[in-house]
Length: 194
Image (cartoon, rainbow, N blue to C red; front, side):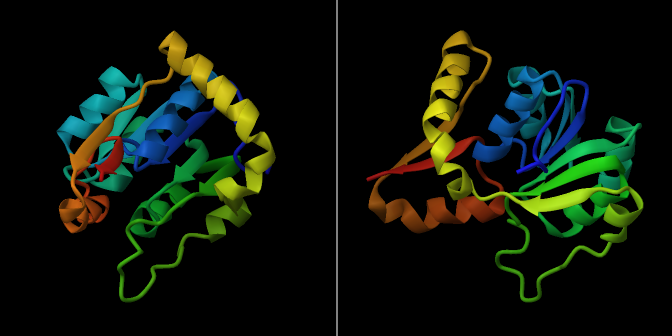
């Protein structure tokens, strides 16, 4: 997969940045020497990704216009956009792609319960910027699991990579906890202990 390769100095924008996947993606990009901006919902999540995880900037999509936020935090454009959200967020990010930018589609949480899927309407930005967009499915990298686990373990031991879990107990709470995935009422990894 070429689309997700990052290099030192890249501006990386991550949606769902306070979640389990986005928080790890952003931290790894920081470790690799990138400038990292996260999109998250609410002041607490934005504070978390900046102050605890070391992101260079945050866009609070609940309290700030996405386009204005991207213009403010990515004034020179985006080299890599790691998308966990889809919909309007993806469309807006496509506006700010730099030449040869890469868009990684990992999720589309904004679309999972939509009656009609919102397809990317700004896809011509891929054309005019010679950019690429590719899906990312973890199972495509099974042969790299062991080396990734070793590297991630080293980063966690050294404190370069941090993790936050929200743990709820009891199978009786499944439905309430499950709905937190879609409401944004979570920070980090959501775990139900049964």
